Length: 187
Picture 1 (cartoon, rainbow, N blue to C red):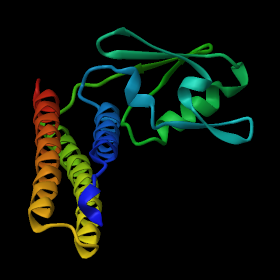
Picture 2 (cartoon, rainbow, N blue to C red):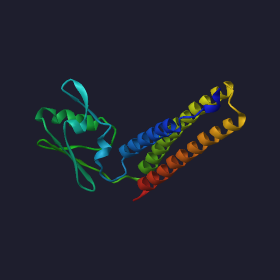
Picture 3 (cartoon, rainbow, N blue to C red):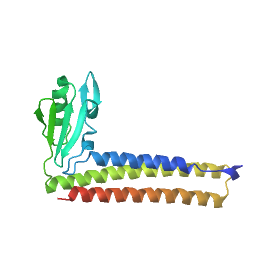
Picture 4 (cartoon, one colour):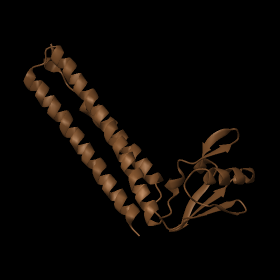
C-alpha cells in the first residue's frame, strides 16, 4: 500500500528555511556597535490607536556608521516615536531635531558584548529547536507510513534523508551564530 510513499522534503526544507529566516531577523535586531536600520525593526510605536512598526511612521536612514536617523512624517508622532525607542531596551538615547530623531550608537563595552553573544546563542538554540521539530514531524510521517506497511529499507532511506537535511540546517545555524558572535565581539 505504501510502496508509493513519498516524503514531502520540499515542505520540510521550506519550514527549515523559515526557521533560518527568523534567525536572520533576530540577529539583525541585535546591536553590534554599528548602526543598522534593521535594529529598529522590533520597535513598535503607538500611532493612531494601534501599534505600528517604526518604519511605517517615518523614514529610517543610516547616514554614518554610528548614527541612525528617523525622519518622522507626522509631527504629532515625534514624541511617541522617541518614547518607543527609549522603552525598547535597545540602550539608545534618542536626540530630537524637529521631526528628525537622531540615534547615536554608543561603543559597546566588553560586558555588553558578552551579553549580546549569549543572546545570539539563545536565538540560535531556538532556531535549532524549530529545525528539530520539523525533523520530528518528518520522522512521524515515516513511522506512520511504516505502520501502513512501508518496507524497512524505505523507512531507513527516508529517515537518513530527513536526518541529513536536519544536519545541514543545524550546520547553517551554527555558522550564522559564529559569524554573528565574531561581529559582536569585533572592537
